[in-house]
Each structure stands twice: as structure tokens, then as C-alpha cells.
Length: 336
Ligand code: TRP
Image 1 (cartoon, rainbow, N blue to C red):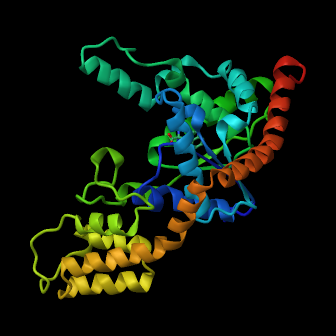
Image 2: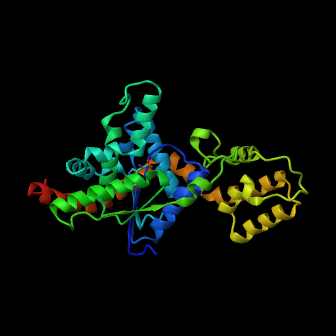
Image 3: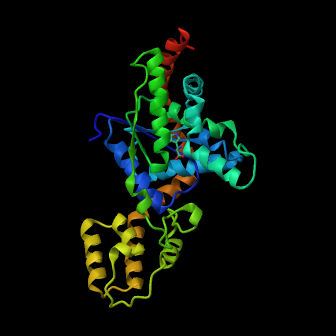
């Protein structure tokens, strides 16, 4: 389905992701990249700068995110995995795009508006704590996308508006300087992201503290799964699988047959929550054993991660340079 497409996605470095991210965003992005004609997956370290003030943290988190994609089977022949800041063409394209992106477009950003609303609610100056990195975030993100002639951008719902802004900005530039300059991208929204419940039944999220880290070690994994909140039904009582966090999580890791079997046992009654949790633990543990080992091995050998990121950047730069040269020629009459 994506065999002739260029797929790109950016991931902010935020440390080890959780199982909700895995099922909702990472796995679909990896699958899509592996099916695509070409894929670009990068760690958006420049985007982290508007909030993270500790360079060590950015470095560690970048490695953790890169190792996650490597451990989970991203096909590195097809996909260039790289760090945003290692492709210096991004700085040039961002400056070029600044001049066709309207301020009004930035004002409409949901993320920016939410911060303004929060400031107002707290009786602070509307622009309190808002730096220009944050305000112009959508322009840097547009540059990320447009630099690589991207057709499709797999993202969560929260990022849809940003991709639409990239379309808008590409459209403006093409309008002024020539229709063929930039490829206008499409967002591909990953719908399941919101449907993955955390340990307390609410959406799995770092901010709710109800998450399971993707590569939790066996003991920690078991402990968190045992903490899943359930109601007081007895083992013999019939239970609604669609209301059960255990089943909801299980079906993301199990085969269709295995998931159907648990579903049946829930509906018929006879499967207690304790046993169901044990099945869930064993399923996740089995699925994650190999990637987990790979992940920790990579983190213990950061030079292996760096090699991949450097090779990825080199490949990414070939396309990035072509794009920037094209835009530079159109806007300045020469290649800079
Ligand atoms: N803004 C995205 C996020 O917060 C990360 C990102 C940066 C991105 N550049 C991108 C996503 C380009 C897709 C395409 O999750």
C-alpha cells in the first residue's frame, strides 16, 4: 500500500517509551516504514530544545529512542534513522520557510494556544514562558517534513495540525516560487493510540503515571501488570472483555486466535483476573524478550547507536541537500 511512498516521522527524545506508545505509534510507524519505498525516522533533538535545558538528558534520551527503534526491528536498509541536528540543511530550510509561513498560522497552533490559555487562567502574562522555539515549532517541523520530499507522515492525532501546517507552508512556497518545489505531505493518523489503557484503565500516559515502560525488566514488568486495576468479579463470573484493561492490552500482543480465546474465556466466565494477568505478563514477556535484550545491549554500546545514526544522517543529507539547493535557487537565485 505504501510501496511507492516516502514515509517520514520524527520522535521527540523523551526517554524510554511505554507500551501505549509501542502499540499506538512506534509499531505502526515501523511497519509503515518497512513497507514504504523509502523511510526517514529521526530523533527531533532540536525540537526538545524549547523545553529541555539539560544537554546530557537530550543525549541520553536520543540514544534511548534510537535504540528502541533499532531493537524493535526497523529495517535499516530501507529507513534512514538519524538525529535531526545531524542534518545541517534543516537550519537553512527553516530560515527559508520562516519567510513564507505567516504569523497568523502559528497563532492558531493548538499547542501554543493551550499554553496561552493556561497562562491566562493562572493570571500570568499571556506569553509567559513561551520562547520562539516553541512559537515557531511548526515551522521547524514543516522543514523536517519538506526536506525529504515526504509523501506520508504517520503521527498521533495531536500532531495532525502540525502536518497540516507543513502542507500550508509548502503550498505558500510553491505558490510564490513554483509548483514543483516542495512535495505536499499527507498526515496518516494512528487511531489506536488513544485506545490503549494504562494500569488504572485511563489512557496509558506518562503524565498519569499508569504506564508500563516498553523494556521493563521481567520482574518490574510482572509487578506492574499485577497492579492493573480490576473490579470485584469472581473467577467464575462472566466478564466483558471490552471493559477489561487486561484483555485490551493482551490483544495488542497476542495472535488473533490467542486473543479470541481469552475473549471467550472472559465472556463465558471461569477466567479469574489473577490468571488473566499472568497470561498477559507471559505474552508481553515473550514478545519483548528479544527486543529487550537488544535494547540493553545497544545502550551498553552507544558507539553502535552512533554508527547507525551517522550512517542515517549521511543518507538523509543527500536528499536534504537537493531540496535546499532547489529552494535556495528559487528564492535567492543561487545555491547557498
Ligand atoms: N512534533 C512531533 C511530536 O511532538 C515530533 C516531530 C518533530 C515530528 N518533527 C516531526 C513528527 C516531523 C512528524 C514529522 O511528537
